[in-house]
Length: 316
Image (cartoon, rainbow, N blue to C red):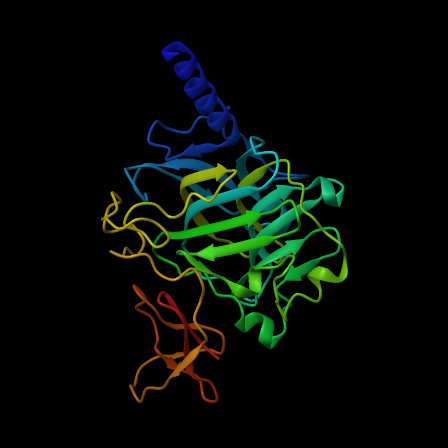
């Protein structure tokens, strides 16, 4: 009986290992596990192991996007994705804020699109999904759609998570908080998903690749750490938003915001904040507040600083 129990436990562990890939890169960069890819062309983009910047420990993966438009792209990734629901968690640090142009930092080959990519990145200064086959975005890039998502703060690691369900569900979290505009599927009321739902679509990804791809020459440096790809949600880890409460092991100079309690998994309704402080003015749709933010807090004329979640306020 003891032997049978041990065999069952070993089988369960084997199943888990096949269903999940994770890496903190503390043992270095295993290029057989995380090979480089540059679809079609590469002119200047680089991938390297960085031993000076990390979310936890000492190492992270550093991607520098090249200056040659689309051909400056570069990724590292894996084809080890679960069959069925897929949950991805990565700690991501941007050097330069998302701009108005379309850029991508995660690409996924997608059987449902004939091998074209399901992309995650930014446009109009905020996070979005892009479906390569018909260029649909989630959310719609209307003023209301833009307001329903968030930007990706710079200068510190942020916990980015998403879920692709077998029923067409897509859920997305930043630092443990659900992003309404980047959520869609059966039973989800997203008023900004018209472009996405114009086609019947259930993602069938065959890989996940992390890096940088720009379509108008935008150059950026992106760090990735503590990546997990699993069949269930992993969360942001101990002491971080979306995980149990205790301090992180990351260095304080580079780690993202921490918390002693788990925040709500939904973003509360936006609330306005006005200020008479003097100083630099933030542009429309720019970040104006949030935990760890140190930039302009005064919004351009005609807009107010609205709190979207504890880590992000936006001029709307």
